Image 1 (cartoon, rainbow, N blue to C red):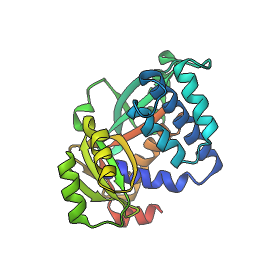
Image 2: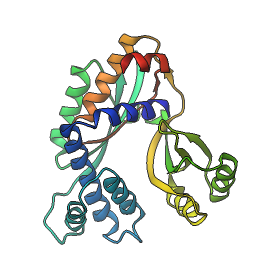
Image 3: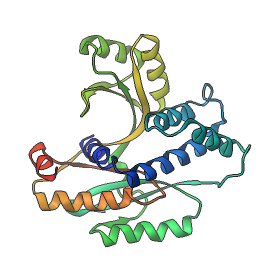
Length: 249
């Protein structure tokens, strides 16, 4: 998970700016709308919507803004229909990159994705070229102030695969993507403070970045992709050692 988790740490620091927060709000609102369109506006019966709602609230998106997005998704208010599209490519150093997009115009977004890759030192690839290097997993984040052995026992009983600490010292409970909601609900029922539950793509193997120049080049591609309005998530199979991360900071 290093590539995604370390990029998430960088994004968290970058996200303090008003411009970055505005982009994050727009992306989360779009995800809420798509989730409501796919599964209805009831969070109790639509676990994807519940997850997107929690993410948006955790990012301080106003409640009335989220509710309007839900109504656009269900058709109560006029809205745009988005398509889910994935793009694959490479960053410098042979790093595999998998991009999840929500777009209302594939004919516009496709060429823009190709341009973002090429202008920032990467290259776009054919569908399937790198997707096989990632697995769809669920990450349930639990407040870190709990006993590791007890959480592990409860997580495994709920159907999870593993647990690990994240950069904020909370617990990440890893589950198969299809079991995310069940694991989250079981941990909540067992009394654990579940902070979020979301799907992610975890690389099956990692490429260790061993130079500052390469690290900067990889992050340049990923940041440029993430900055695109249609891009929802960017995943990559790199690991930057802590010493290099400190230099980047």
